[in-house]
Image (cartoon, rainbow, N blue to C red; front, side, top):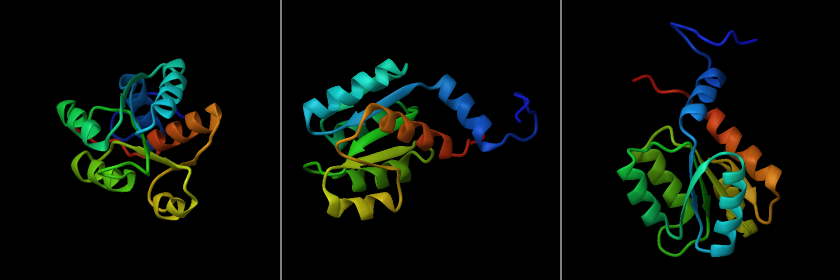
Amino acid sequence: MSSGVRHESMDISDAAVIRVSLRRTAFVVDDNAQVRNYIQSILRDEGYSVFAFESAIEALNELADRNGDVAVIISDVEMPGLDGIAFAEEVNRRFCGVPVVLMSGAAQRKDSAQSRWPFLAKPFMHPALIEAAQLAVMSVPAISK
């Protein structure tokens, strides 16, 4: 059981909890407005400040403006332009430590997305989204500054 404060070392779950409590911003990236609105509503109800984007390029630009200071990104896989997998790879390359959850209704994209990132099969219910977001955040090790 965790004692709370540790000076020299901290296990990943403690670090993730601290990070989440300090940084409660989520990005939602999906070209479908109904899906974006649904996810935004759920995440806002969970206490996140949510920013929604209809393209991965818009989300990358805002992420750069924020220096990667985002708790979690929820992104569709199937999008025009930069798809969700390429987007997640770019986020990982440029902003190591920002967790990405990918989602898709296309079964053929599930295997390639699921192998590297948490994955949600569309359609999904509220608890599945929250669980995926929490697991993604908790799986990213803390980065010492």
